[in-house]
Length: 288
Ligand SMILES: [Zn+2]
Image (cartoon, rainbow, N blue to C red; front, side):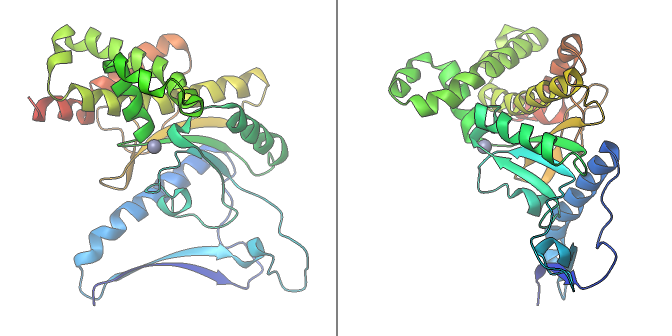
């Protein structure tokens, strides 16, 4: 029988099921490794006999420690701001279990007031174990798709005029789409706007820009508050391949999470890297 089983295995033992990452780099490596394991798992669906993925979890994280009563302490090693999209279940795609991640999900993974408040809580109260904050966009994001369509066809905005809650999300994304579009025109020339793949490329490049910009803003906040031991990272979960992708300066592939640019000047080179990445170029090439 061909099966893929993902098993959360609780074992009563004295040592932690998995040691917590001790710094931001270790936290980033663990998330990248977890995503790689998850991404390849379904590739084995063709194998005879199927495959099992076992995620070791600590019984203590459910308050099941022998001889102890009371709730377990909250001890996530990373906070993840992701999109509400049902195809992006955060713990699952990083191979993590209960009490590993502090997760905030909101359409378009933007930095609204409640999101910032939740992150502030995590940083101030979970600082003992928390090492990394990740902003995770995803391919085909509906929020960015709508923002791009409104940008390309401003007349469509009228239909949203009375929908204040939706506009709250979309208005914040317009600056991201505008900047990404300017970058594409600067890199490829103004004719690119007539390429049949332009809309799709703009959506996907805006998704990456949006995640990186949010991670950059969070990192600025950490540095300003002398919490520089905390690092921010960004990535885009590709629903097609189940892999995390993060375009970055100096590479065209961009596998795994990455740290955002360190200042606004670096953002310009970063914008070039996004629009010239293999992935974004593929939309423009294949649909010509
Ligand atoms: Zn989304």
